[in-house]
Length: 147
Length: 145
Image 1 (cartoon, helix red, strand yellow):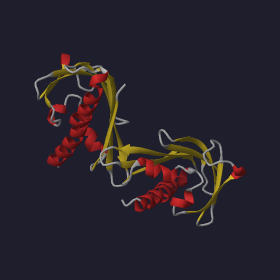
Image 2 (spheres, one colour; image 1 turned 60 degrees about the vertical axis):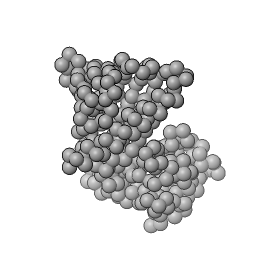
Image 3 (cartoon, rainbow over the protein chains, first blue to last red; image 1 turned 135 degrees about the vertical axis):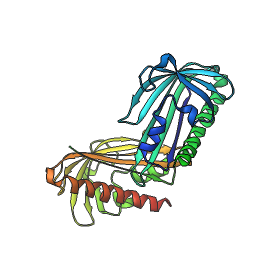
Image 4 (tube, rainbow over the protein chains, first blue to last red; image 1 turned 120 degrees about the vertical axis):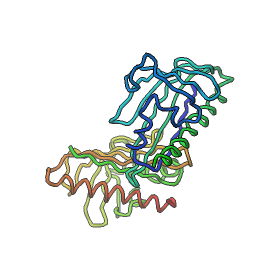
């Protein structure tokens, strides 16, 4: 089962980073891969179980469900329901931890999924680089522009 | 119950940092406040339950028991058996997590303990700002940032 782990340090307090990340319906405002986002059935994006529908810049659509969200731990978990690429049983976890030395943020993003053996390497690299690493860079840029 | 949490980023891969800090008898090798250390009963320093008996450079003597050590998750948990600090039920954990972006190490050092209420702030500052951060600063110097 592929396991992706990516982590970075953001030069901002966790509260600022969490203020952006906690919005399960907000990825279209900062992630370069996401064109539009909406929550199905007009539910609140912090309601556990809500489903977000992404349209990606390449035109494909995917649906993801919020499994857990904690303001105390500054973490959330979600799974993929529908996607055009052959990823199954995808569950991802995002959590923020304070770097007290300098008031920065440690951001950890990890996931597991199943796929066909032939696709594992390509999909792992795509998610790690184009989704997670690109997301890190986008948040840095987003916070810089907001400052 | 009082809680201390400090964390930092060390500019080296986590396996290199872990090699430096995993030795439960090795504090004098990297922590500037620790003068000498030995493991009681001649036990190996990675035997869970072993006790280290060490002295700070100021002369204070502390005995601590190894409760958990994982090379896989890179953490070490220990309790204080005996110290002049005036703490009870003291349990601390040192944990390393890789920062994949740039091959660095995120280091956390936390502790929980009971103490007299009027001493809580002073102890939190001494343990977090003094002992733990002092160790971090030494590691950052050793690994160049």
